Each structure stands twice: as C-alpha cells, then as structure tokens.
Image 1 (cartoon, one colour):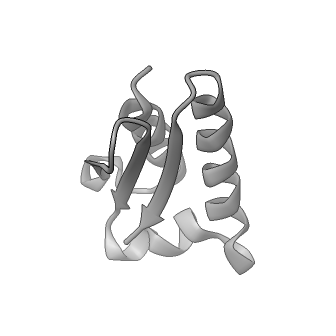
Image 2 (cartoon, rainbow, N blue to C red):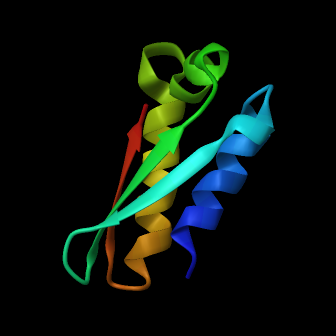
Length: 78
C-alpha cells in the first residue's frame, strides 16, 4: 500500500495550492514509517485545523490504513 500517495491525496484535497504539497518518507526499520507533510505557509492552518482537529483526523486515517498491513505510520506536519 502506498501510504505516501494516500497522505498526498488527502492533503491536496484540503489546501488551496495543491501543487505545493510535498510528502517525504523516512523508514525506521521495516515496520515503522514516518511521513513528513510539507505544504505552503498559507495552507498550514488548513492542514492543522482548529485545535489540531484536521491533523488528528489525518493521523487517524493513516493509522487505520496502516493497521491492515502491520506497519506503523506516523505523520509529521511542517
């Protein structure tokens, strides 16, 4: 499963400038994946949401997507 593509698609649907969405993948072992989401400075608030609700929802969806494959995915927003 391509977790990087899933996160990228979700982020592009939220922001105003989808061409500036970038997702980098860092592997820490075989089962631990860290995805680093970078968006335009003006879109950072949209991705984080009020009190971090959108960011929490994104992380929850990614965790659920990874659960079936036995991997652990964490998302960092920069």
